Length: 140
Image (cartoon, rainbow, N blue to C red; front, top):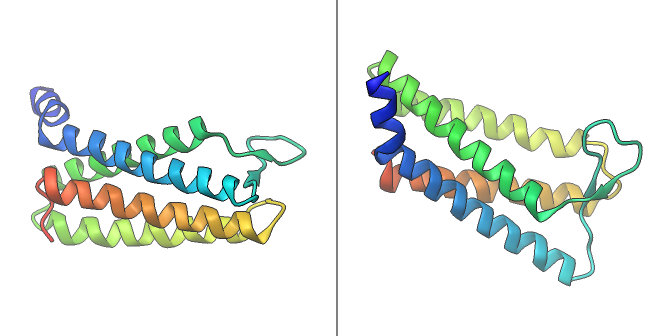
């Protein structure tokens, strides 16, 4: 338990928060720019029948959850494997490919929304992995 507390309050925890914050800020900027361009990204959330606009809070929460999840996976890999870096990159690539396939099949109303969500996934992945490389001790 002490190891986990040290990891959360240490470099890995800080890297998760910085990665989540930078991913959230960049993706919120993308969302606001697309709205400014007259494109309103909409998606069905939960069991809703009709698509609704994607909220800024939903984008921010999703980015922080992704960052915390990535740092948790990296922490567990460091505990259980010798070559945690290479395995982390492989898992991250698989998760990114799977998440990129979701907008293609998602019940959204427009192709533009699928494209915007795909861009947001790429931006979040880059920001989170970049933060883990800079602050979390993840090797390049």
